[in-house]
Image (tube, rainbow, N blue to C red; front, side, top):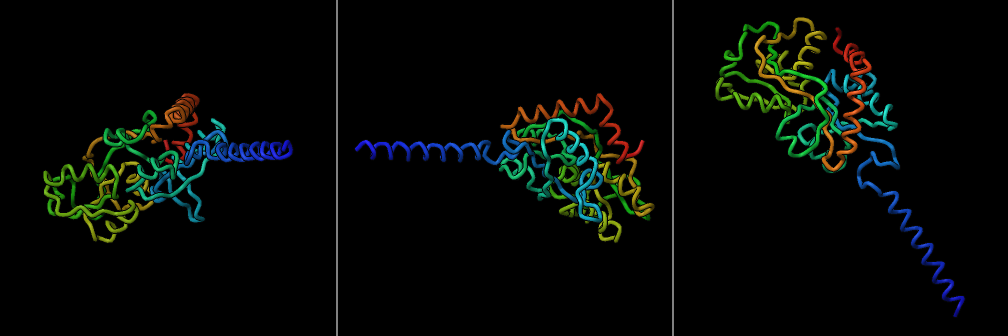
Length: 260
């Protein structure tokens, strides 16, 4: 009888130990930046130069990529970069497929209802890019024309808000800005509304193929997006961004991608 009781007790101890190990491995659910793994996953549109894009060899590079790598190093984490559908990027974040959105993400009131943000780290404008051969000089001249935007972007929101005011013929939506700009270059559309950092990058890369209208469609601020349930982690990222600005590291990375 004693042997039977002893056997049962030993079995229970082993069972509790196994259950405990399983719980520890699942700590944090899908949050890959838990203390056990010491890693966070950055979700991005990998066709969004110069913020985040693929080099000729397929490596993900860019301004935001370098910032995220430096921040991860300072807080003692590994960082992984994962390409996601930008139109569903907030859903990917809140579902736990990624841990942060660090890819020229505009801070808006609508987005702040769904996710948390760090302080702004870069100020940007929405601009209109036309072909280098175009005679268009103002947004009012876009009447009855086809304008391209990236689906799910702040550019889409901006142009949709003024579509009727200007009398735009059609808003054509693309999965990324690169395809929109290629269609512009080919003459299939007459303009692209895009973040200024992207537009000016392509101006440098493509010479006279494009021209930016002097008239902007308003300013905006970029922040790093995180789950509201991960506010402590978000604050940690915010503090390290402040530190990087104060010690000059931020400006060094910025100059690498945007020049002086």
